[in-house]
Amino acid sequence: MNFDLIVRGGTLPDGTVTDIGIRGDRIAALDDLSQADAAETVDASGDLVSPPFVDPHFHMDATLSYGLPRLNESGTLLEGIALWGELREIATVDEMVDRALRYCDWAVSLGLLTIRTHVDTTPDHLRGVEAMLEVKRRVSPYLDVQLVAFPQDGLFRAPNGEANLVRALDMGCDVVGGIPHFERTMEDGRASVVRLCEIAAERGLPVDLHCDETDDPMSRHIETLAAETIRRGLQGRVVGSHLTSMHSMDNYYVSKLLPLMAEAQVAAIPNPIINITLQGRHDTYPKRRGLTRVREMRAEGIAVGWGQDCVRDPWYSLGTGDMLDVAFMGLHVAQMTAPGEMVACFEMVTDTNAAIVGAQDYGLRVGAMASLVVLDAGDPVEAVRLRPARLAVVSKGRIVSRQPRGDATLDLPGRPDRVRCRHTPGHLTK
Ligand SMILES: [Zn+2]
Image (cartoon, rainbow, N blue to C red):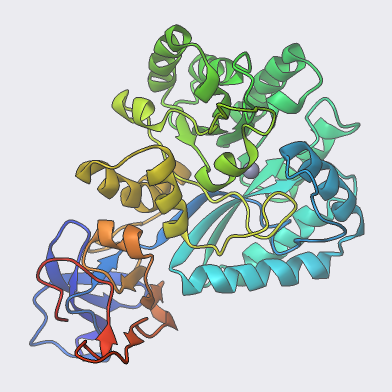
């Protein structure tokens, strides 16, 4: 037996058609393996084989809690935060673990195999941190989870904000989080960014802040974040999540801000489904969309990934865990409709996100971790268009999920008896 598993005949995102040979948890060959055999084989001929999806921004301590203990009537970010403040006081560790594990099942079935999740460190009991550390441990054989210590109610605004954040880092959280626009004043927000970068530098940790998630064009904490990144030598390990205020900023100011972010190598993670839902709530018409300036940042050489943020929680009632839903929404709201931009939307939920969160051994290459997803699509743009069945998901060398194709049967006179929505030249008759 040459290999443990061979994925035969798939089309990689760059159009290469190849077999993939897997030994143990590693990719051992990308080649014509028609003469080789394996204990197990996946036929991917005509289908897209991609590295797994990566979600760089999620809230797993709150997921699948929609309606608990009550509904978000206004639909705003601020009512969501207040509602979560009630829920986190009554949710048990077991309940949070159960909900998160259920979400992780969804994620795996959709080919989402790396998740960076923010964990609320506000309450003194830190039950959310305890629960998410347990989830991380339990899913680690098949799903990589990074935990961001996230002072949801503010580093300085909450009574023990900094002490509890530090406790969460001591317990094992991987990344320093924050929420400068939610501190009491602009000055407190600025000071929180400085302090959080200091903590990260002392501990050698990455930084990922909820930054300027507001329609207020004067919310400019991203500027401080970029400047502190340079001052402390944190280039390449700092992320600004959301950055929605940039949507409303003056163009001249943005022309100065973007080169600063590029110099600092600060990455950006917009969360298009949530941003389009929560922003602009105070507007009449015209109503702002709230998504940050994705095309402009990309043109400046800033790494931009798409994040999911919420699924069935106090802030968002829908969601599935499918990063292709996220890419689909991002493509529309950012108007990334040119062919290369549509491809980029797929890359943003795979390679770009992996690079932003520092995923280890990622990608379809010899020596990399043998994790991949086989999609019922011909190429990345078709994957975004259809958000199709994940025919097989391989994690760390093992097939962990399978799904049948989603074809419909049709009963119409003179028409085919089967409907497929794939529309990639060369794959139409598959
Ligand atoms: Zn968030």
